[in-house]
Length: 380
Image (cartoon, rainbow, N blue to C red; front, side):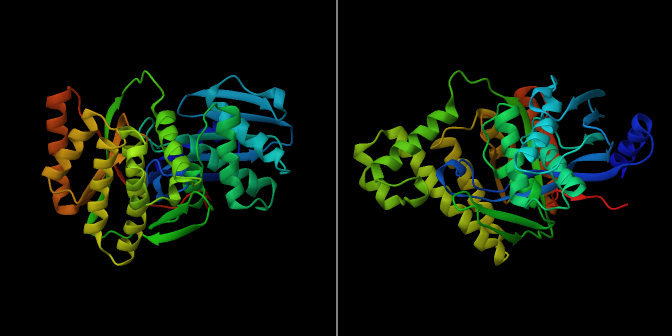
């Protein structure tokens, strides 16, 4: 593996000798968008794009990091006041601090890391980085005594406390718990989870990255969250997880048209996640695909988080006979995720590149992804 060899070579050059290799994965979410803060379900999986690190204890209380991708070094201690200046190094520092806060042991170490998770495509490279180091520190210094869920929370708390991002748990959860050929249904309220087989012989999972990110003048995520909270309050429930369309219709005249649309999407999306899980268990990819298109339509028209470029990619997918396609992520740019039959793949990719470039002046980026294992030790 080219990535592994590059990292091992860089470790030898920087620190001499050998370390232990660890990796964790980026993630996709097949369906279940904007459901996490509504107490609903998400349906992610780890992918075959990873952050990998070569790590070795150094018998000091200092951490020496080298980012191979950035060709930058960082050196820091393990106390709160030792936080490094570089943003990229704060992810690793945060994992160290959050592990210590939970009573875990962290000692000084040397590490070289690099990755092939595409940046800016919504595949959660930061969660992969956090999960890789959280898993490694647990294995190296704590005899794997920290539960896996706590490793995911260490990554989430790192984002909150050291990187200024108030994220949910899904990205780190998928990176830690990912399992080859399986997607994971996570109940965002109870944090219960279940694996579902995702063996899709004859089909590919492909991301089409618009390479567009629209600058937003207001805070659209907060506004949508507030809409959902207002409707839940009017219904007398904690979150829209407990709402159904009948209850929503009954209060339609009491709420704004905008709040109604937002709630309608979330309630529909809750059911779509469950329908997709059932469909996968019986090998019914047609239903999976239909639900993906419905999610895109809802995100575009009711939740209004799409943009012209993503709607255009979705239309191209339909024209090319792609079985399922939708926006993946928060919206306003980024990727579509597509479930494509092998015999339609070449035509779809060629058409998407040609038509998108003709309309917007640049080609989209294409990433084939395979559902793979999450955080792990790489055996020699």
